[in-house]
Length: 292
Image 1 (tube, helix red, strand yellow):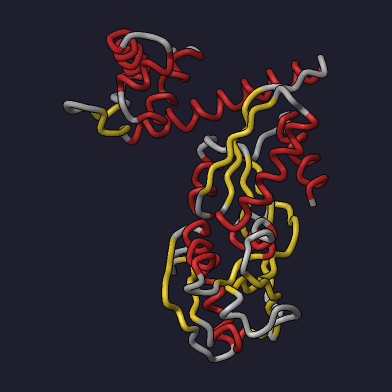
Image 2: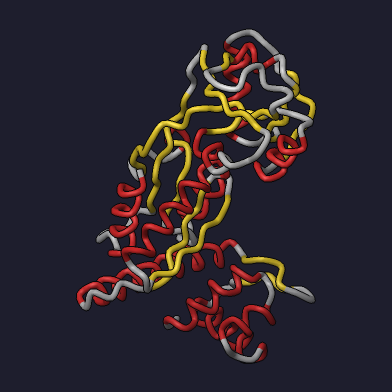
């Protein structure tokens, strides 16, 4: 039957989706890598990998084996973490998913975690809510920061409420300080995230609630591109307060909290279900609370 090395090889193939690159990642030759896969298939008496001239994916049976391989490796890593924690030497790699609007908070959590446990490595992945859910379920993520209402309530704890701010070039801003209503913001030329983004859907729902159509002149699928338009002076934008705070030093712009209505959406921390909870995830919870 499969040993730990076989499971690592299978997961590496899933990650790289290429035999040669996966073999390099595992530190063995491609012929040896392919032989291990074939040996694993013989052990299960089932084809696990769909092959052509290149890797074409996993069979249905292969997907099942892959799911369990990830779980076994995650449990093994949790055991190693717990043993290391007894030596006050928590180490390893934590993979954290984050929706785009919470990336500033994820970075803050990562820095706090590294201060508490300098031997830890943190990977932050910018993902959609759906991608975070999928990767938590297949054990390729350890935790995710996402909208609370979209997450599994049994695996998610509420962190904070995300409110909204208008960021506008000085020439477009109706005032330099104070607040701004959503109806005022609707009249400004806006650059927003694309409609497939959850944050944009929340913004659209607020405008629909007050019966107004915003003046959208540009769209982008990331805040870097959106804020570049604001910095150029061509449009204003609506962003979560956490994103806005990262750009307080952006010259020639004005930030005004949005009111009438005061819209907010809860952000939560979702952790893959594991018992016992690995020390790394316990440490993550401590770092999250310290970052609030």
